[in-house]
Length: 383
Ligand SMILES: Cc1cc2nc3c(=O)[nH]c(=O)nc-3n(C[C@H](O)[C@H](O)[C@H](O)COP(=O)(O)O)c2cc1C
Image 1 (tube, rainbow, N blue to C red):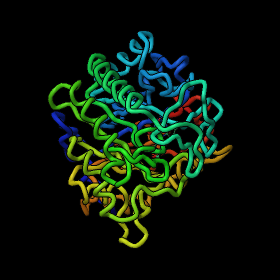
Image 2 (cartoon, helix red, strand yellow):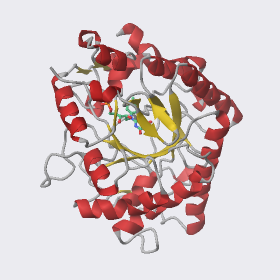
Image 3 (cartoon, rainbow, N blue to C red):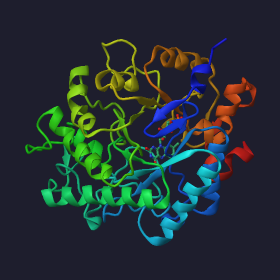
Image 4 (spheres, rainbow, N blue to C red):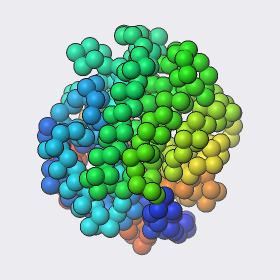
């Protein structure tokens, strides 16, 4: 019998003592009409805190910059109407007992229109004045000029404005979306960063943009409010991409981020059990990031389910429960590979996931089917 008790021990994140190690991760459900979260959306987030998630990370929210992203059904972090909605989210999650941070997001060159939920389908949106470090939309595919220093400064300032707003609206800190091939990741990933100034050319230089974003955001936060950075090997445009070929390269890449100072790396994988490097043992991304940086990490990716999220979002698919790999999760957790776990789809389907796991009521956990996405705010009621 697997012992899950380690998941129900406290964890210090900045000034907050989380009561357990289970986090609700950022997931854009395309239900924010005009970018504004409704009262139902706020209830949906709060319901996950009520179910036991110690921290609720909002879906990726577009920061206040012309090309941060413009899917009209995903959350916007600019405009007074949207702010009223996000204030409501923060209040409701707090009332349910969780802490909450928004995931601040700029897509760089990866535009996700309403019809492009998943996959490699990306368009260059010249009309939005899209920007990226070297103008590459995918490896080998340059579609525009590299960013100027002034453009870089504008994006950094937009992250700082988003952070100031997060504090004003009552959030507890921020998560930066530095994963999946969006703008921060476009600087980190050598296939898209061909700069020769201080932002490119070496692993350390590729981490510089993230570090400057973090410094600018830190100035806006209150003492003890955490900065979390999401990162990943996989990209929307390349599922097999790698940020670094060796642990040493990973260490150099993240050194400026560590120096800038963050509280947690949120290490996104599609399947948590996959090793980070081919020839360096079984440790996953969260394991290696923790090892080379000394900073706490969160792991994610198909916890409790048998299909990864991009596969399971396919037409008519269902990710079934896979409780056996929870043993594997705990083996890694107990080994100290990571400090937190995030549970996405399994907690869309069953918001009480943390409470049920704690009480051993595994028979009440639910699979995740694409059908739930037709009305995701109420998915748990139908599941
Ligand atoms: C519908 C949906 C929307 C998502 N939107 C975001 C997002 O806005 N930002 C982000 O960083 N990840 C996003 N993700 C990825 C999830 O945060 C998570 O990494 C992924 O679902 C794997 O976790 P799981 O297997 O527990 O579901 C999304 C995933 C899903 C299923």
